[in-house]
Each structure stands twice: as structure tokens, then as C-alpha cells.
Image (cartoon, rainbow, N blue to C red; front, top):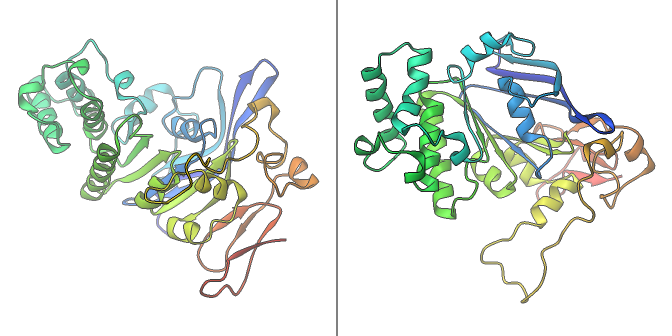
Length: 339
């Protein structure tokens, strides 16, 4: 049986808080194959970015991770910093949320894109700059040759994002992580960036891990998906199967709160909103983290973590005490029902 490109198993991450250590990521597991696009979706604070940072060994100070993260069979958790430095940029590239903070304002963009080429591939300055220019042209930066010596503040938000993508792709990584890559971009630029990422992933045979809070974006751009809340996976599976039968109350609440262009609604009518707010890490229930905010909450939801239940044939998995798969769901029939 072939080894997955990326295999994450039983990943737990804890962070220090005034009340003691708190679980920020709880038993996350997934696999990602070369050429596949996996989406992580959920509200801010759900553990998406922490999961990505754990893959790179870039967790914040005081964080502790346990479990397993394997890249091509190599365990990454616990690797010495020197070994992780050889993997970052070379085998795993990352496009961070905010390109202005990801780019160094004191260095020219040509030098920043060339840096991983000089560090990992030992190219000379001239060869690295030539390849950096080719990368900037490939990601669609206008007049790349003339702007190699410009500084980050001289570019628009969309152009800065293209520069960070060029940096992440410089060494041809096996895995590209894109953490909210369309933050603060208008709708047209958002789709251009997402199309670019997918084209580059297909062209270079990479796997792509796409992180977002937008269910619609995940629906249109991923093969597999995980819905996260409070550090736990609420629902997961092939993207088409999950959206065909959204089952978990949290997933349905996320979709209901999303505005839909073209939908005619009465003026001043508010979008449906989930009651309550995401609790602090130290205050999350021992069981399902969505307990209390969910209208289907039972006593067991506060006490025990719900087991993963998988639908008959589609790999669609839900973690909810009140949901169960229907074994013979037909056309137009729900694939999950409330117990």
C-alpha cells in the first residue's frame, strides 16, 4: 500500500493559559495525497492555523504537540530545529494569511523570492534572481523584471499575495499550505488567487492544504474537507459528499450564516446566526466543544466526545451524539437523521 504524502494522526496541541494548559487541537487526523486539495474550514479560533503551524514546527512559544505528523513516511514531530529548517521551504511551502507581515519590508522582493533558492538549492545570486524573476512572472506579477528591486509597500494586496506564493513555490515543495490566502482581497482577486494555487498545484504535482472560514470557498476549490470547531473535527469527507448532506449542526449553522448573492431577502432581515460565542480554550466542554451552543445538546454532549460515524459508501464522517447515518438513503432522501 503506497505511503500518503502527508499523514496526521491523533494530533493534540495544548497552549498555556492563566487557568493552566488548555487543549487547542484535539485528536486531529487526516491524510493528503500528492495532487489532492484538502480544505480546513471553521471560525477563527477553531484550530485551523495551529494545525498548519504544527506541520512546520512553528507553534507559538509554550505550545506542546503530541501525536504523529508524517511527510512521505518521515515523522516531523520532535525533529530537531536544524532538520525542520531543511524541510520548511524545501519540502513544505506556506502562504501566510497576511502578505504584508509575511514579507520583510526592508528587503527587495526579488531578494526575498531568491532567498530559499540560495539557502536550499545553493544557487548563486545571479542564478537565484533569474529563477525568482521566472517565478514572479509565473504567478502573474505585472512587469516582474522591472520590479524585482521594489519593496513590499510598493505593491497592492493582491500583488503581495502573488509574491508570497512565488516564495512558497520557489523550491518546488511537495506540500503547499495556504492559510486564508484571500484575506482582505476583493472577490475577483480572491478567485484569481485560488485558481492560480490550483493550477500551480496541478502543474507541479503538489498537494494543497487550503485553510478558510468560508464554506463556499471550500466547496468550490477542494477535493476533501474537514469542518473544525474548538480544536476538533466536527464533520469530514469528500467535499461533494459533505455538501450533498451537511449533517453536523455546526456545519449547517456556518452555511446558513453565509450571504448568498442573488438571493432575494426582505430589507433589513438578518442572516441566521448561531447562538452564543466560541468559549475560551480553558472553558471548552470535556465532550463536544459545540455543546451548549447547539440546539440538539444532550447531557452526554458536555461529558463525552462523540465518536466518528461514517456514511455507508461516501466516506462522509460526522461526530455528533444526535446524528446517525441512514443506511439506504435514496435520491432526495437525507443521508443523516437526528436520533
